[in-house]
Image (tube, rainbow, N blue to C red; front, top):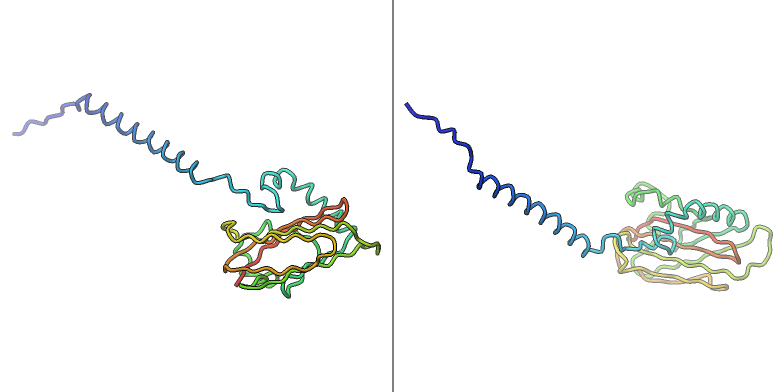
Length: 191
């Protein structure tokens, strides 16, 4: 016959295990916070519409209203290589990058190597346009190492730029004519 030993666990051992688990958990929390702070999370300004995402988020409704007013006064056409885009649009903001695979327009707009961008703008009432300013940022969706910034003032309507990386790209920018401002956001890819 064997005697069953149902002794309670040593209190010192139990407290030691509890304290070790608590300190280990606390250490993991501190390590996570330190790694997050050192990885620049939240410090990346994605430059959509040549602004920070905070400003875009706070003012998105005003941007859409501004685009509607701009479209009432002006006709604008963007030409990336051979792809023509009529009017201002920010609809691509709401699409995932993978949506590019399934669509037939705005796909493969950028080439590896030389690319040409030009724009045409006219007023709907036929008046002469002065003080035109167009700023464009062509950026990869994953980083800002290969960004291309194009700036156009008054009579400049064409620019040539080089792209060296395959992948998904965003083309974003603003156009100003006198006091009117418009915004655009285009998702595409380079191959």
